[in-house]
Each structure stands twice: as C-alpha cells, then as structure tokens.
Image (cartoon, rainbow, N blue to C red; front, side, top):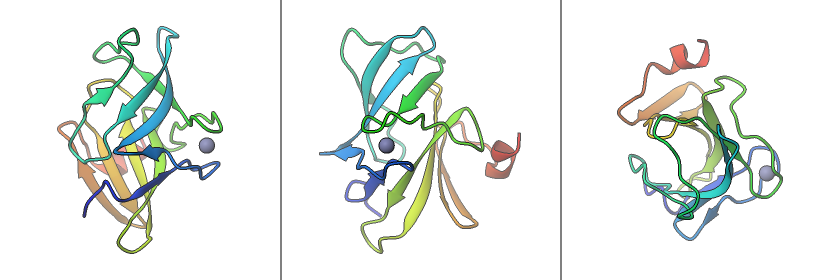
Length: 132
Ligand SMILES: [Zn+2]
C-alpha cells in the first residue's frame, strides 16, 4: 500500500498532520530545544527534515506534539513511542501508527485490532513493547 496517499490524524483533535509528502510535528528535545520536524510517511524511511539550527542528537528522546492542538502524542501504552492515526486511502480503515521518540531508533508499528505490522531495524515484539 502506498503510505503517501493515506491521511495521518492527531488522535485528539483529528487534524491532518500530513502536508505534501511529509508529516509535521512540533517537537521538544531532552535539552528543551523546540522545533518543527517533518517525517516521511514512507515506511522504512527514517530521514527527517528540520531547521539547520534545530538538531537532534542520536539517541536523544524527543517529545512529539500535535502542531494544531499541542497535545502530547506519547502513547498511553509505551512512553518511548508516539501514536497517531493513519487512515488508509484504499479502504478508509483507521490504523494506530506507533513510532519511536528516540532519535535514530527505527521502530514503527502499524496496528489494526489484533493485527500488527512492524517496521525498522529496532523493532521488538509488539506485545512486549506495550506491556514492558
Ligand atoms: Zn491535535
């Protein structure tokens, strides 16, 4: 499935987080630096765009906020992951999309009911992740 034509929504305000071919987030680093980050919705692509004055250190934990309603997107199930909704273009089905808040860590999960797809070099068993 093409991830680019899907819609990505804030779980609180249901505002659209995708613009052009990026997902837009307001973020704050562990060092309290704030900046906008653009992530690719393509699975397996972990490059991100940012202002040159806003740099992430590898391994640094980053807080992700909705740029529209400012809600903290941290998953209630695992504090090292953020969660947003993905609405599939094909069938309008709503998935939960979890991604790591640690810079450089490649860990993404796409969850629908009891089916889980995991992507990235750093994924672990989703059940372990959610109940650790
Ligand atoms: Zn929001």
